[in-house]
Image (cartoon, rainbow, N blue to C red; front, top):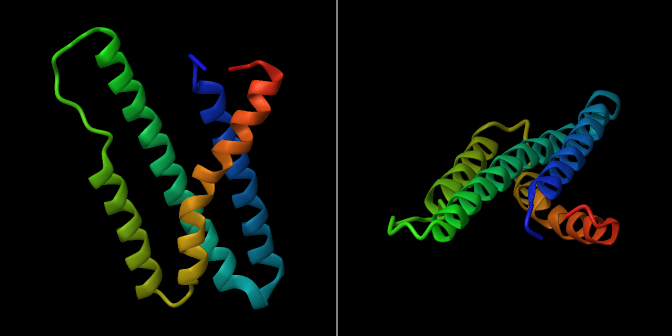
Length: 125
């Protein structure tokens, strides 16, 4: 588990596949447009949060490994601000489902679990 890049790449790839499927559903199934758009918006923001957290974890790990006395954080305020911004956007514009947006915010983090299991079985991490 020294290199987290394969897991970040796998989660990003799977999230993009989900977003492509949702956008296809948006184009073909008119009754669920609000849900698919909301989920896509949530997935995009969740992926940004996931990749930002991975970057911050990498920086903190390098800081600890090099024994720098520098203060660090994991960017919680930035990540919660992105989530609040997306939620406000979903509430303000009626074309997005708020419930689907909130669910989409958590999916990239949840995809990290099966990605980690799969990659540890394949020994790529």
